Length: 498
Image (cartoon, rainbow, N blue to C red; front, side):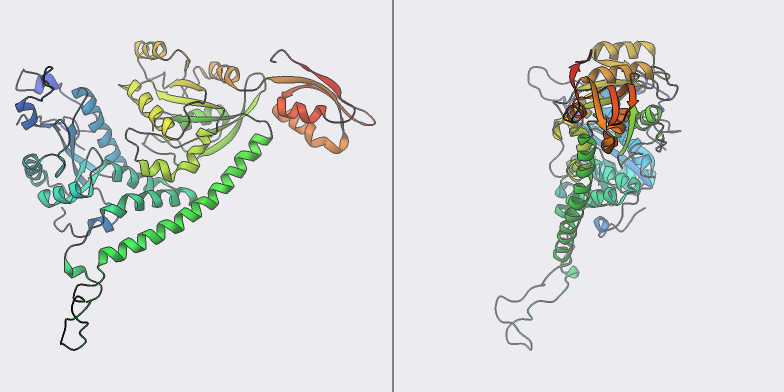
């Protein structure tokens, strides 16, 4: 066992390098010829430095609200570099902090794959138990999604509550959801996760006694003896009923959201969606572009409920801008499914602003994680503009490297306003549909079309006569078709954008 003991003033701070702390100069390795991990690698449980920031009865922990206070993190490193594994653990620590916990320690075990029974392997699970006792932790958080069996057996060994990465993210979403739709979506995702993980603790949980046996008073005969319906069965039935109710509510709210999107589309206004990794600065960018005034917080998943605002390009082209929930590595599929109606703001958009934290130590990994979720919701065919944010806090060489890797990108700082003008110009170039020049006589009874021309296009001349308003403007194609269909129109001509 090769321990790593780290100072723990604050999450993410590392006061020593891994190399300096390693008592064994040989790096962790994998046999290139056989693909087998070295014996020492497989037997080692490594401490993760810089992660620092009592539960005796674990009965029915699944039924209680997750209460994270003093936690130890545990991860299995199966592929990639040690730096990637430690980044994932540091992100897990930030997630735990966001949920309101204090991180005491973190460990990683090098394995070809997680142990199918106890995640870490039975021996390392017992070592984890010793660490839990030494630190006084009341919760273990694993950096992965554990099966019901892994949760149960690991919990039996460490004797404290065990929570995996998926349930931790679900708990954070439950804390941050504000709208009725958001709360319903999170509740549905939690129940989808919880249903297969319910468990019973023996016949003491029986709700009813079942048959009393043959010959005795009240006997039901042979084959009828048994504990009857258990608490686990009752809870499963109750959860399924709640899930049915929530799905019905979400479907109703989804219809309302779809109507709003259709209304925006019928006006001919292009839709732009802001997507990206959590805490990349999406809400700050929305505020900078539209003055929306939405919550901006240096925390993971500060935004769950989508916000839609209108904005204009430098040449007057109007578009809608939607802020959406942030993504993260291994985003639980239950959340993707439950938030599908919300994520449709992205999949139905004409352009995606993919916001990246340029100051992050591995922005390429964030981009890959976001694109994985975009593929899952069917948004891979939508034009994408990479917005490298936080330029005021990022090293110039890192920004240049990322810009070379992503040629179709703009470097900005939502906090200072750097690069915002260039971003708006890039958005205008990427928006679909050319503007068309029209010269029409609009009857006074259709003043709504004149208003739409001012709102969504660029009016160059407007004259009021006896029969109506003479309008010369550059407008979206959909509005141009409505205007030129009016009596008294002058044939439309394709403008310079056509």
